[in-house]
Length: 236
Image (cartoon, rainbow, N blue to C red; front, top):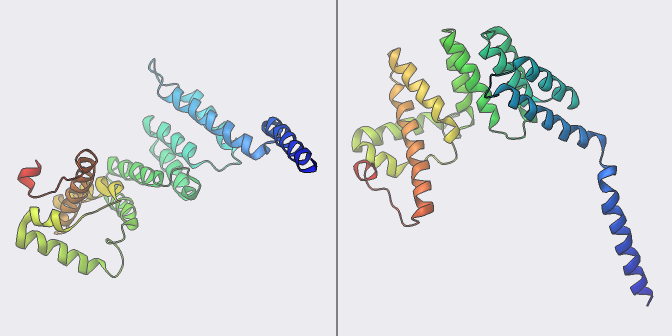
């Protein structure tokens, strides 16, 4: 009987706790939720179908940043987007740089690549090609096979497979999994190096293709688990 009363008391206590929990949420958590709500309101103002309202959007983003105690990289990037669209490139760069500095606080880790691509695009428009190249190469720093001591051996093996046995063999031999974020960087670097006469253009173009083939094969296998890549011609 004593056990039964103890169980009832525990159940009542839990019920009371669950009812009161919303009012007991820490102020920090409430601020986090409110900050995201303000951020989304700012995005709506930016993309208003009747015409963007950048002034109001800026107010929402700044208020969201304040709610987060001054650290809200996504909102900093959004402010940069407004300045970019207004042609205020110096201010846009300042915001993008700040967002990248705060990248460890991003809710989606891969958004840091979005910031780098924004910077690369900004630098390309300004014809600051060396800076554009640095931004794009920074994206590639997270490719385990593309940096470090193993890169020269990887590059030699990768290109040898292409030159000696062709695209089909290359795509069967190498699978670039989990690095879809790097496709735009390889594509742009391939174009840039080709235009400036650098031999590494072919490497970046092939890597972009290989990653896209890898992702396409993964999607096809979701529909047809038995799918096997054979040749480029058959795949196309």
